[in-house]
Image (cartoon, rainbow, N blue to C red; front, top):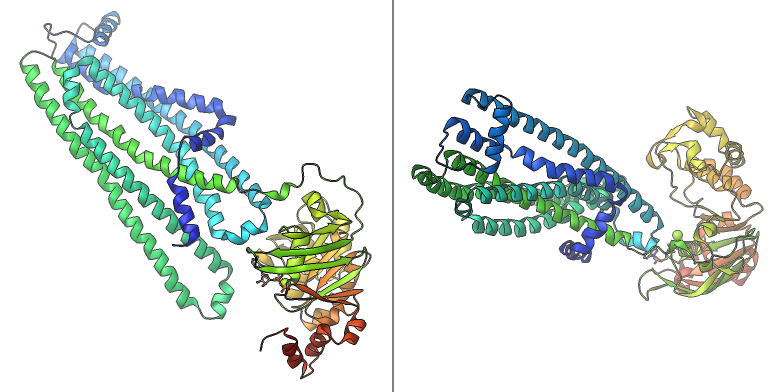
Length: 628
Ligand code: ADP
Ligand code: MG
């Protein structure tokens, strides 16, 4: 079992009053509706359970009246009402009278239940909405470190099935627990009121039912936890494989992946069947046990009727009630599991919401002013994991308006530098200054608003072109968008698309060429008119046809702003004001193209390698830059 699964398990175990209280907090905005729901629940049980007492009255008053035996208080009242309404004179009329009351009570009961359902569902939907909103907002604030650690599938589970579980608890779980408790109390009180000895007799099997319930509860909880783990695994697997479908197909891994999925799926099925066997055995078992109590009541009550100690109506009503008693008892255990599952889900949701989101920035961020775009790294040390340093004592300066290129081998730490600059991660040692201010003292949103970044894998969203350039926001006007697109040569091809700027893109921009996607992302970068532009290997996967177009677009992008370019292609960075060679997390060389070539160091070797000198690779091996 992996650490994360273990974590899910331990989280699932907790579940207490504190949690319930926090959950109830979500009801606060809807407390009036919730109060109405409780009231309706209280009304519901007596209305729905009016049958047995009325049966007793019908038998005692009209079917088999026996003047020798005492009537219950409500029977006396009923008889009076019947007489008053002129229905007491004959058994025929009396029975119609009682039948009508029965009907009326049940119609009312159903109306109450219906209303209650609507109120509860509305509350549930509202709570779900609030929760999802809150979780998503939190996701967006959580640091990249968190997202690195947590598979998308698992986070999706939080937002979907965990939220559903909480909703179900509010709409079904809590409601039926309350309703059942009311029903049980009502039944017990009524039985005790009419005949406490018979009551005790009918409940002789109660301890056994409770034992059964406990057994069921324990087993169901374990099964639920197991199922949840398996579902999370399926989700994580699917997420990864659907988004990586191309790789799966490209490498012909379908059969292999199918087999792995088969295994996970199979585990799910087996567990599901086991759980349902367990679930479906519970209520029948309770039923069987409860029948013993009912039989006892029948036997004892029958004897009492014969001996003239109690009325026939009492025994009939008793048996009816004893039957209806076990139903809410069973139902409570059933729903208790639902509540348990929801509490576990809530626990996981809250654990997520409690993940600190440092994005909020300092308590009193520096007052904003016009950014100049000066960047300085001062002895920066950084590791993604523990002490596994990815950047070691990195220092450099990028002056405002300067065009700086970061070069070096894959894995050297170039992307990491931009991640730190944008505060996707926090540095462990040293500091990063933006316009002379430590970036930790800047408001995060404000800091990032100074940057536009173009990455190698271009992030396009499903939606039209315009919203992809403007990122949906009103911050970019229509004119500015078109101007930006024109500037980077994207306007032409966009206008040729059916619908132009309103042309819809598929997920991740499928349907456009890489070059076209690139141009769109350039237009986006330019439309926001940033102080600093970061291109991270943005031009490395472009076909030669669009290359000149793109190169010109990049030139225009960088004009008049600080830019940080990471590139494989040395040709695209020769014109940089400063080239910084990053190697194994250290700054190895800094200078212009000409100077670095003259130094005959790492850059020179890289350059020679790229331009096909046959001894270039050998040079690099000697320099320790690559391992053969
Ligand atoms: P470059 O951009 O120069 O190719 P990166 O900055 O992407 O290099 O990566 C530098 C090192 O950091 C690599 O060894 C890489 O494996 C590691 N690394 C990058 N991103 C992460 C991450 N999110 N978690 C852990 N390690 C990472
Ligand atoms: Mg990189």
